[in-house]
Each structure stands twice: as C-alpha cells, then as structure tokens.
Length: 75
Image 1 (cartoon, rainbow, N blue to C red):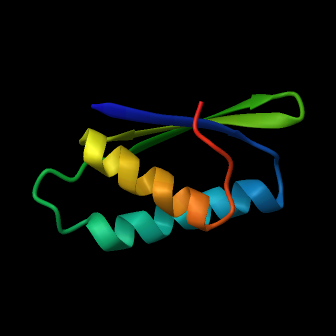
Image 2: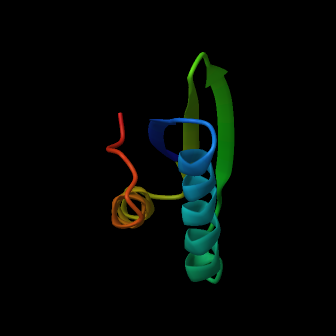
C-alpha cells in the first residue's frame, strides 16, 4: 500500500480534507484494485492525516486533488 500524509488544522481545513477524500472515493471506487484506509491522530493544534491508497498513482492523484482544494503539501 502507498501512503499520503499531511497535517491539517481542526475545523475548516479538516473538513476540506474529508471532502477531498470523499470526492476521491467517488471518482475512483470503480477501480478494480481500489483500497483506502484513513487514520487521524490529534497533535496539539493540528491533526496528522494518513491516507493509505492502492498505488503511487492514486497517491499522486489524491495529492493533486488536495492541492486543488487548497490543501497543504504532503509531508
């Protein structure tokens, strides 16, 4: 599995991240090798988000969607 990791602020940014995940799932769920896992870890004033996907291509596509929605860069 392949990982996308980022840090978001609780509130609007965390909601935007959830929206990005939902949009991505809607677009990609028909892929034959589709697999998604999401983990959140509160870290003070931020949340660590770890999204595990089925391929590097899927990670790249999600990263682009996240940037398009105004999200920060992956760590």
